Length: 322
Image 1: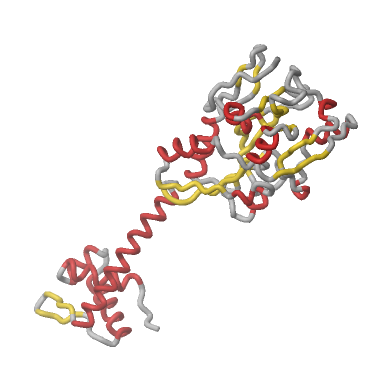
Image 2 (image 1 turned 30 degrees about the horizontal axis):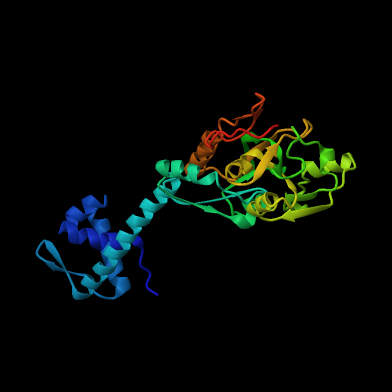
């Protein structure tokens, strides 16, 4: 294999453009002797003459013409590569891989992407749905750039930034016997078919509603752990049972489905959601800013003048509290 370096391609390309060794040496910031040495070095390596001298000017040999064709292609590709790397560093191009813990509903994401595209049009956002149940493991393996999570892992390689707070709500069909209740107590779940988001025991995440049911010795008829948020909504909509979901997840379904959201007891506290990252870049920082902006005002009015946390970007909904 020939031992040809990048500077050899630049050398030939510059000599052809400038026409003389003197001008080429000035352009490459070399002495004329250093440039001549590099040219001799190249011709020795190729074992062919690259240029013929015609007075003070140099003329490419046939072999030199072939070398120039490759030099132009390689230098052009290198210029594109340098530009791409610069854009990557500045967060102008690339792919951003994200996932959200527990929930598979991403109705909130299009608004963020639309705004983000206005800032970073060259960045593609890819939702890694397979990371939903173990997002931090994916993050540590480099398979995610941003994980939107509730349960933090004590790891020095992960940085957490609080994004918003939410509130769990009881979700029931408006034909359910509990529909007329002002709010739902933990004991109201006794004997109910309970549909909850799938929870991987390996994540160490024990749903708060199950913890409270255990503490109060409340037993559901069955607990169904379902992978897809939309499927949970469909079960409740068909009045096959009840669920407990976050306000920001269930909000759009309240407008289109035969379901109601009811407040739970005070011990079901608000929860903080974090953006977890293992590295920082302009693309990631811009996405975090968009997340914060989207979730900056998190209140939905109730007709009893209380408030439940909800994304400001979503339409304000009056929850049914009879």
